[in-house]
Image (cartoon, rainbow over all chains, first blue to last red; front, side, top):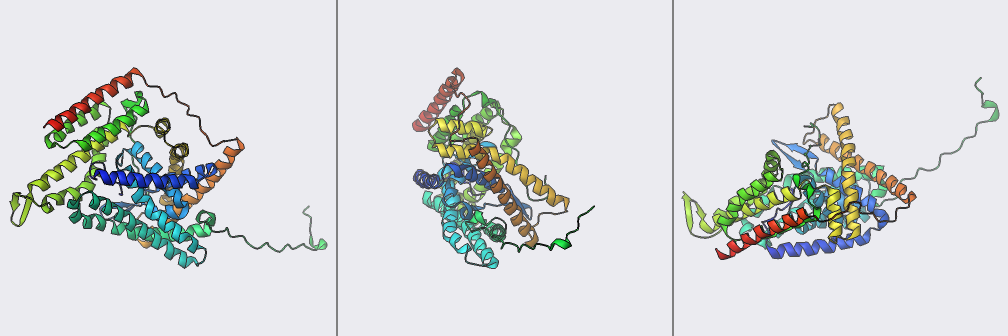
Length: 222
Length: 254
């Protein structure tokens, strides 16, 4: 899980994270107009539900983050969507933290937004295999970015945490691998089924040739 | 328990705090967390743990729910706090052969464990179980940007619908004998599962958006509840304020 609870980070890190998150949310809100609100919200709900999916690994299970997918689909609007998701988790499950809301938002959203904005234009130019590869890269790097953000927030808070960071980051490696596979297949799936979601133009089949049967060949069923 | 992808996370039951105005609960949670983060005295923090547990119990929080929530936090702390006594330099208090636990490291670790757990208890008790719609209204009245509030209200409404859709897909998988495994097949299926969920959610959002525009949605929700502070809120706020003030005074004087 990418939640840092209250009580771990130092005050400057909390304030810095809060300011960054506020800036990101502001940008995201400006990018969506009133009509896009339902769409963004339903995707926020989807990603919230998506974080409940788990892949069993040995005795434990891994929950997906879907940060890369969010960035690809929502762009800058990922910031408000993640923030809303975190608020919902706080109320529905009592998860997360209050003071760390900003830091958690940035850790989850920023890597996805950066990767999504960079990778989205490439999707239109490649074949399905290329889309799987781009999706896999975005998925894995987004998890790496989230883990890196957590490590950075901890390291900036106190040098005492530095020796533990390797372990914190290492626990995210299996998740990165799983997200890579899932995001890769997912992006190819979306490009095929609903390309608008990824900003690609919808596939329009060539109009079928209209064949008018000769008049004598029409038989009227009695 | 589902055998496929979806794992049920029981939402918190509505608590006895529902009688308070949601803004009071939000403000109370923020105040408690701020005081817990500001407190430095270890004995005081330790003394607050039973107080917090009793308060949570009085608020109607189930023991099992709270235990599950805290177990989740402890998972994060295991890595972070266990290594501190080994790595923070300082006079060793306990030595097992080559392993020496430093006093300052132990103190740091204890402070973090106590603060994290106290904050988690406070958040779980005060905010957990608050209906998302009421939280949205409270945050709107506290000055959160309107668009963000709409986003929260819409998302809160749709979590249930998306989850129901996910359950249908999950049932469809299980009926076909699918078991979630970390195999290539399992991951590919998960990707298609989420992709399909996303496509359906997106199409639903389009329909809803059209339907709302047909009904002349002007991008503005009325906040339907009254949201009045009562004497109960005042009593709670004053009581909690006095307790927190006392905590701060004791902390700074010790």
